[in-house]
Image (cartoon, rainbow, N blue to C red; front, side, top):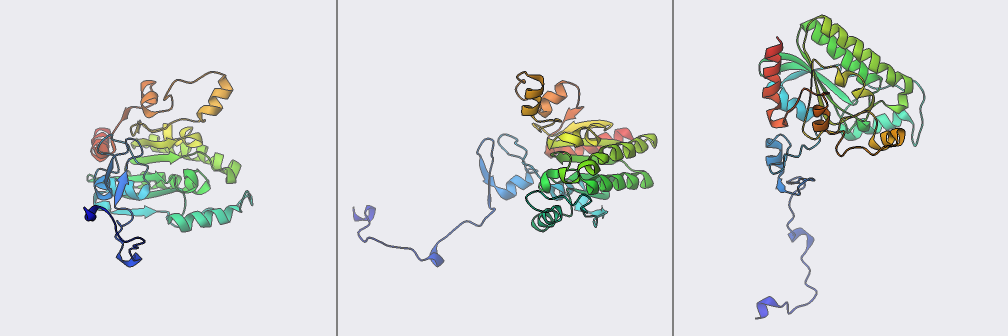
Length: 280
């Protein structure tokens, strides 16, 4: 039975003869550990076939899902953060911005675009958590404000997709001002009787939750998205009580009246199109 026993010791396969699977070919669900082809995962709207776990995605993926044929006009693409406070932590703020821009291929934590969704003219804003935690600085507030101006000018609905850790500490008060700025712009949209739908994805927290994310004519969310203002530890220490399990999940927030409905990402475009047709 010599074919079961290696007679020669120290046999080494040359590197050039080794076979390896290309990077990015497979996706392993972090929730149920199911392994699937990355392409199949993408075709399922970046959700798990087995347990429907919604992988965090960015503006490029949401625009591909929502805009017809992924055709849109990007708005205010050139805007980039300044350094009004000359802020330095482990590195200067401008260096942190430049590093994030180079690594992520983004100018800041939000992108906005105008195009068609199921034939409906619409302006969409989408936050990118991978850019400094989706934090809201002056550029984020300004791009959202300009996107609302575009919706007002063209008399079309506005959809905002939130995914953020909250205000950007490197801009301090300037960041907090964006809460009032975006809220005031949304009031103009309301006066013009133009629909605004807010989509909350995982995670939506801090000053974003406390401003434009909760001001929609309809507030909707993806399944199991983390939605809240302060983190669980901060709340527990403040009120001195244990918190119920999953109290900041989309399902808990829906149950307590802060959301209108939860929708699977695969159904998102059709449900939004139906909603905007109703709101016309």
